[in-house]
Length: 508
Ligand code: MCA
Ligand code: AMP
Image 1: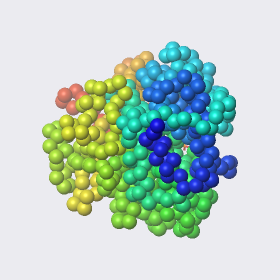
Image 2: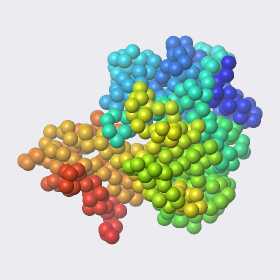
Image 3: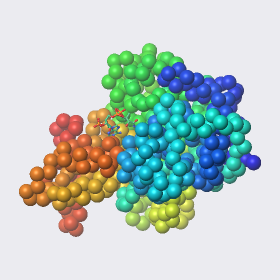
Image 4: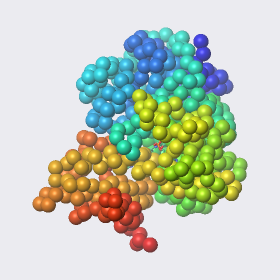
């Protein structure tokens, strides 16, 4: 029996008593503990009747046990489906109806509501709380640690991660064992991870960045992580003397810079600061380097592809670029209309191909087809160019997307919810430069004459419908929306008009 991803993880373990995870409370999990507990949990999942290929949906707080659950799914052949803890019940209903998981693992505080949803689609519900207790752990306690792994090949599914779409509902990106393993090994080598590394892990573990980039790189290096429940700059500064690497979204670095304690002495034991998920401002890059002596290493990826490019470890890390294609990834820039491959410094659609690129969207063969070229390149929806030195620059987005604090929000989803509210004629949702989140979700709304709808009423109505981070930071009421001659709303005009809403800077 071979299990493509877990066999490789097992091979990477230097010593069974090496530390894999240390939590904020000081609890330590060795690699031996990881093997034991992922085995017990795999046994529990198997006993519940989950078979290879079945989905296991998980909406739980961050904990070491939650990472054991991810590994348990890999080992028993289940398809791991992590869900953002901010998702509302309405959003969950969609994911569960679409993915049809055999098992949903929920926080005990949400279990009753989730049972109501899960029972509609024939899914079982077990619990896992943030302290590492819950019904699933009780079951695991009764299992043997010597679980016999399910056989999984490179092409078998390891996970489905939902990613919002420019039209319609979210799509489940199907990631195989080979997708995850190839990217983890490539990043491990590119970023020079060794068993001596200790990563500060302050990202959520329900998206690619915290789950795959951070966790799989540590696992395939036999390294360790300081697992923190969330991002807290003071705590991170206090831990830096015991760590070597930090991975974060740009908001992490913006907030760290607000701390006086961030200086060369504080980072003396750190060897690497990595940023991704959203554009890192050149200003943040420069100020961080001035304060710490470290050039933040920016990389670029997507849920569908894991990581595609990275600035170099040894060479120059150029602010405002996402570096070079990774060793096993091909990147090209094409004309968005014709698909013709463009030359150096020409701006167009970024397309990628490699073992990192996903298998397709869950039960959406048509959507999958239109996002791939005939020669296998995946069309990212990001606009960019490759310069003379080979650095990739992301210049814009061909997709209508807002990235706030590293979370993606598709305006269409927010607009459909607002449009349904009584008293609304129409609306447009845009991203506006925000000093903390990079972009702030902003809704421009046209009310019906005489309607007394106000900002509070709109936000209250969205409360149950959309995760908090998707909700507008500001709602602006206007008489009408600017349109072009074709009648299409001109979001660029709105972005310019409200460009200084959060920064207070005068418009250029
Ligand atoms: C929290 N809030 C937000 C966000 N996060 N609003 C907009 N955007 C956000 N990102 C809201 C909360 O709802 C709350 O609102 C208020 O801000 C404070 O909440 P709190 O939990 O205290 O927030 P925080 O701890 O300050 O969180 C900010 C954060 C966090 C640290 C930037 O959002 C975060 O960890 N982001 C990382 C996301 C990530 O991992 N992305 C990777 C995706 P109120 O007070 O009004 O209720 S993977 C990806 O993108 C690709 C593949 C890639 O390349 O990596
Ligand atoms: P997601 O939907 O969470 O997979 O987000 C993927 C998107 O995040 C990409 O298509 C890019 O638009 C954006 N992204 C990720 N990393 C970077 C980066 N370093 N710079 C700019 N955009 C990025």
